Every structure is written in C-alpha cells, then in structure tokens.
Image (tube, rainbow, N blue to C red; front, top):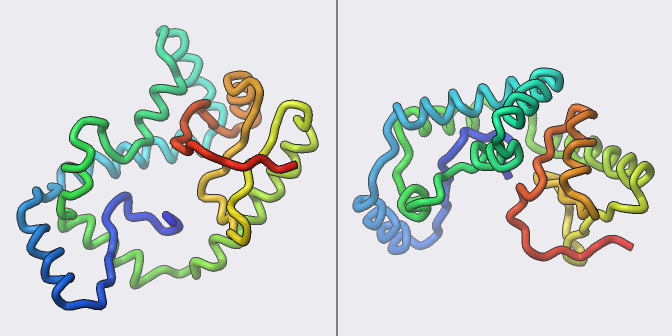
Length: 192
C-alpha cells in the first residue's frame, strides 16, 4: 500500500463485464478532480516531504506552531489526511484528474525499483527501529502485532505508550515526526 504513491487514485480490476459496466456508469454521476486541485495536493505533500527530511527544520516549525498557541499534533495530522472531513464520500468518489491519471500511469509503467525491494527495505528499517524502541523504552512501550499469520509491511508503525505526548516529543528530538493520536486504528493485540 502506498509504496509508489501518486497521491490519490486507484485501479480496480473486475472480472465480470457487467460489474465493470455498473462501476463506469456510477462514476459518470460523480464529480471530477481538477488539475488545479491535484496541483494543490502535490504542492502540500511536497512541502511536507521536504520538511520531514530536515529534522531541524521540522523541530523549528513545531516550536513556532506551539509558540503561536496551536496544537502541533492536530495541525500536522489534519494536513496529512488525504481528505477533508466534510463530504468524505463525495471526495473519495471523484473521478481522478488527467494529471493524476498521468502520474499513476508513469508510476506503474516506469518504476525503476521493484515494489518487493522497497517493501523489504522498509521492513528492515522498521524492525531495527522496533528493536531500538523496545530496548530503550521497554517499561512504557508495547508494539501491537497483526492477526495470526499476517505479514507486517510497516506502512503504519503503531506503538502503544503510557504517555503519547512525551513519546512524540522524544521521537521528534530524534528526527522522527510522530504526532500522538494520529492513528485511526481502533483495535490491536499487544506483543508480550
């Protein structure tokens, strides 16, 4: 999931012609994302990506936001959401813009790094981080595990801590932006 994102869109492969026809028909009644809307999303995500690559800049921005009396975690979390809260279903159902379709085509057609390699590297990095977190914070941290037999690809890296705000601050000092309360997960089994 989201290994080579185009910041939106999706592809559905349907075996039954009649179901495909129904889906296409339903899409005719939904609005279409404009290229301008997609450009705004690209710019926002590019800025967030650049800031996230520079821990000192990220820390400075966090300090400025807090100095202004705003909740850093809430602000970042809302910026990272793919959709505004109002009319979520209407936003999800929009047909993709031409620019988004073009980027999706490029991502699928010209990916130079196989997805397996990207996911494997992410899993190794996150397993290493997981070991470091458990070693340094074992008294106040647990890491949820998936269902029996599931494979963890670490797109989300959930942790459970006694004091989320404190952990968020500690991780930010280490160059990892981890707003507390950003997860939408509601159920997890803790590791022993």
